[in-house]
Length: 499
Image (cartoon, rainbow, N blue to C red):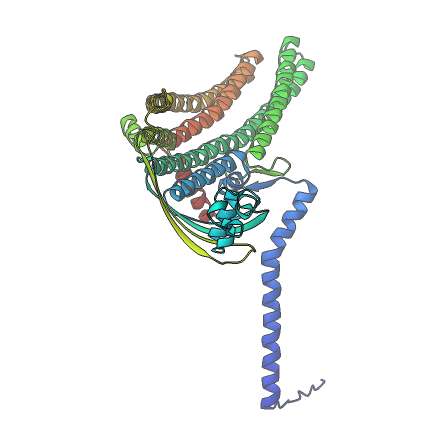
């Protein structure tokens, strides 16, 4: 036997401390690498997938964020909000004092202007009156050269002006209220744009999944048709079936191929629509997990009452009506006087310097008494515009009631179709199974089996479409009551937690 001697090592406290520090550095280095892989590698692989042209699945919440960021429907509504804010700032500014700085530079040889310049500059002398030409009573009729022909001179008038709008007949207040109503309409319009965008995106998002389901069903039907065609061909060789049975199976294979191509085309169209809505038409994004909305349990009346107080399109129409009513008040203000106060401080000098200060206070009062119908025409136009906005609001209310009632009826039909197609699919499968048994016993024809299989395929397609329609009708009801966006965000958040 060999003896192995184990050496005992003695480590000093200093070396032990150095060893611990090195171990800590190694741990920090390893953690840094892990964080690097954790945060940067997903983006790296994402870029690789984009470069290779592979499809990248994203959930509905991510798709909605892209749509809200890139879709022109949203960017346009945000621009309208900014425009309304600017109008409100302008209206508020017109109701507040204004401070301005004026600089007037003039040069003239007009005697009145020149004498005025010298007075404002506080440099007028007796010689400016032509006293040098006065020699006594006999020279009273002599024209003073210095006064009548003073020559060219200039004046620099620097002024600070403070203007106060004292009374405008209610015009400024009406314009502020009108701008506030316009801003409210723009904000409600943006909310409606978000909801409409969410509905359109859901339709495209679910449309892709629906098209994929239809494509898988078509491929499955094609595989079954090919299998049946092979069986029929073998049976024909054995003399157990007729040539017409073989032709029927081949016809079903051909129809299945057409269904596959049609399903592929539908998938491509839905994916292009989806990418266009999210503002990434050249990307490789496709929908991920399907979205499922709970069918409303409220009554039609409850949804209608809620929509009257929350539907953004309706609230936007109401805000536009209120804005036009404020426009009528602004037009009527022209029948009342306008009063403004102006305070001015000036400096006048031969050169651009601040000399010879002076103050001026001016109260401006103006009242248009007669204008031959200009004001009344403007008021009539404003009233007509408000009447149009009122009719549009009432029409929106009626249309909202109608759409909700129609959506509930469509939902009822869709639910019935969904259940019927589900039952039909189950019954068709069972019928096909029984016919196959009868066919094997020689009690049924191959044509009957194929017809039953076709009915089963049709029921499967009907179920897929009914499920899709039920989702869209539910989404429309939620959209009309202004809760679709919150429902979808909540659902996708729950899906993210489950992932």
